[in-house]
Image (cartoon, rainbow, N blue to C red; front, top):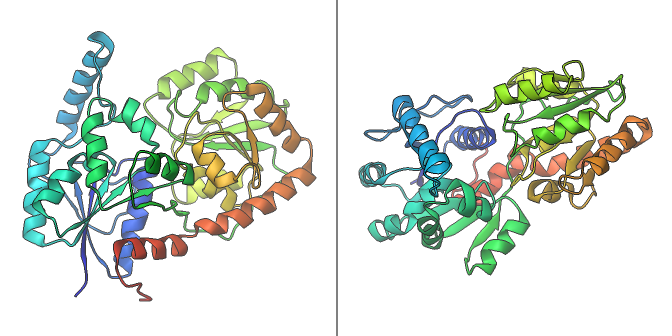
Length: 381
């Protein structure tokens, strides 16, 4: 008899977390594992998904979500209260989850991010069910930003999980120092379909991919970096997000409309072509727990330049596989970029390093690791 597995998730809107979740679930489903999805936010998946998503009663629909956003904004910016900066399930959603688990007899539940808050309560109700907590960010980010108001519940929930999945060795060390056990590093996989194409290193375009979130993704840094590159080079940006209007104003204010080519969100073949139409990849994020776009870019042989942070350090391994600058140091990262811009031999060297490293994140390899974590037999079907 196959194990029945439930992924309790937030939502599947556009973003790296949603993309990885959809790919992992699709691949496990393809291998005929019994997987279901339970989401407290009622949204359609931005990415192809071959499993129906279950929503609880009074799920967070668009109207409720907008109302919650307004309340959060008032509490944070007017009343100056501590708030959760990502939506989280409430007790009603939890009760619906419990009912659904009882009805369907799951042997394993993967609690993604916010759902970890309820891990201890779930363990009390279902002591025989295996609970796996899946973290996509650094613990400090959950404590101080994403789940700041629910911090104590979240930390307590971590202790209620049978095992915890994190994206980097650094984060594993952090959690173990907090006394948490059974912490495992499980990387996100390469999620693009076409993995055989390689970039033309003669193109005078630097690519950037990510959510348009000025602070998190360092788009203010990108503006300053753009001012330093040679006149015949461009930065091509793919992405969309809450700061679209602000980013547009920043580009215009700094007279960079001919230097920064913002192309909006891309997925599938369009995203592949975006990478292939460049010869260098730039990441400007202030913080990333992993940095899936780095792996995607490396898959196509793009030389990498990034700021040092948890995600890029894990993937690039202290400049073994790409050029790394001190976080926020515009001069240093601009100098690293020029090193690649002015020297094709350097681009070719780092292109080979990128291809070499990208193999460590193949989907087949990561899915086998997931099967081991879930305790299900690998399938060759």
